[in-house]
Length: 574
Ligand code: ATP
Ligand code: MG
Image 1 (tube, rainbow, N blue to C red):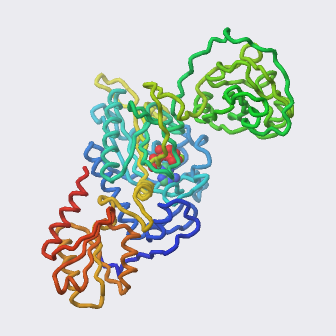
Image 2: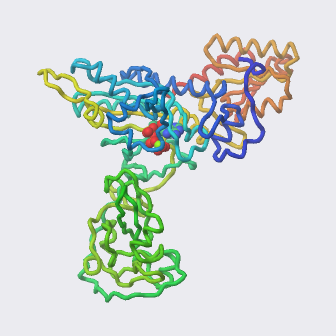
Image 3: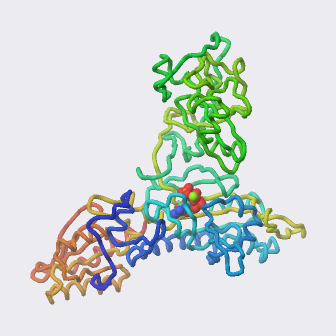
C-alpha cells in the first residue's frame, strides 16, 4: 500500500469532544470519523484493525466448532413480543415503523431472531448441540453515547448463541466459549481478566465479563490476590458480617437532636462526635410503581444492581423530591427508619450491627440518636445491598481484595431456557419426547476491543498497536520520495515483504521526514524502516521498534529475514 494514495487524514490536535485517549488517538490517526453521536465511519486504516480483530475472533470461534451465519439487523416487533422483551427493553431499543405502520426494531442483540430460526429448523436432538455466531452491526440508543467506539449507538459485535439438550451440555458450550474468549484477547495482545458478572436485562444464571485492564475503564473490578475470585463491582459479594452480641451493649434511650445546616454524613458525624459507622443512611427508591426504603451504613453506597435483583423490578431510581417529602414529611436529607410508614424497608446486613445509631428523624433539621433495630424499627429483610470496598474481605477466601478498573470487551451468559421456553424452541429427544433447548449467549464488542487496545497501548506520540491487530506490520519510510535510488530500495523492500506475507505500507508522500515519522508514531505501526542516503551508499537501513523505542542499523540483505522473524514472533501469541 502506498501512503500517497491512502485516505489517512491525520490531525495534529484532536477535536475537543475526545475525552479519553483511545477516542483522541483514533480521530487523530485518521482511523474513524463521527457522523452523529455514537455513530462512526471507519476509515481504511481503522477498518483494517477491525478486520484483524474480526478474523482472530472468527478463527477462535471456528476452532471451538461454532458456525458463522448472518442474521438481519431489521427485526419485526412480533418476535420481541413473543419473548416478552418489546415492553421491557426500554428506550435503548431503536424502534421504527414500516410503510404499513408495522413495528420493527434495529437489533441491539439477537436472542429473538436466532431462537426463531432454531425453533423452525431444529427438530431433533440429533441436530444438537449447535453454536451459531455472526459478526454484525448492532443498534442501541444509549443514553450517553461517548468515548468514540467505546459506547456507540451503532457498533460491531460478534454474538454467538449455543443450543444444547441439557444443562451439562450448556456447561460444556460455555466452557468452550470461555476458552475461546481467553484465546481471542490473548491473541489481540491485551492484558485482560475474566470476572463474575451480573446478568442484567438479558437474564439467565452464570455470566462472566472479559475486562481489558485500563484506568479509563467504566467498570470497577474487585479481585483477590490470594485466590481466583474476580467480580464486576455490580456483582461483587459483601459477606454478611458476624453479628455482634447486641445484648452486651446497652441500648440507650432514643433522643431527637437538632442538626441544622448539616448536609453530609461526615458533617453529621463530626457535629455529633460519633463514628460514621454509627450512622444509618436511608434512601427512598422508586421501584417500578412502588417506593421502598433502603438502609445502609452512612459510609457505604447502595449497590443498585443488587437492590434491583433483590426486588425483581424493571425500573429503579431514587425517588423524586416531592415523593420523599410526602413520605417523610420532611425535606430531603432527613429520612430515617423510625416511624416511617407506607413503605417497605430493606436493610443492608451491616445495619444489624449498628447499636445506638444515628438516623434521620423524618423531620426537617432533626436526627435521632440511639436508634436500634427491633426496638425502634422493623425491616422487611436484611440483604447484601451495598457496594464492596477495598476493606471488604474476599468472599471466597477472606483475604484482602483490590479494586481496579477495566473495560468490558466481552460478555458470556448461561441463558438456560428463558428464551427457548418463551418462544417455544423445542426438539424431540431420543424417546420422541418434546424438550426445550438450553441456551447460552456470547458477545464481543469488536470496535470496543480496538479502542481498549489503544487505551492499554499508547504513549505521548500516539498508538502502539500490538502486532496481531496493527493496520500494517511495517511502515517503510523513504527519506526523499523524489530520489530515484532511495525509492528503488524502498520499493524492493516493500516487494520482498509482500511476497513473504508481511503487511507493509510505504510512505511515498512528498513530506518532510519529521512529518512522516510523527505520523508513523501516531498511527502506531509496530516496526518502522527508514531508507535514506546511507541505504544507497552503504547498504544500510534504520529499523525502529515502536513499542520499545529500540533503534538500530541493519544491512539491506539482512533486513527482510530479520523483520520477518520479528513479526512472526509477535504474531504467534496464540
Ligand atoms: P455495557 O454494560 O458496557 O453497556 P452490555 O452489558 O450492555 O455492555 P452486552 O449486551 O453484553 O453489553 O454486549 C456484548 C458486548 O458488546 C460488550 O461486552 C461490549 O464489548 C459490546 N458493547 C455493548 N454495548 C456497546 C456499545 N454501546 N458500543 C460499543 N460496544 C458495545
Ligand atoms: Mg449496555
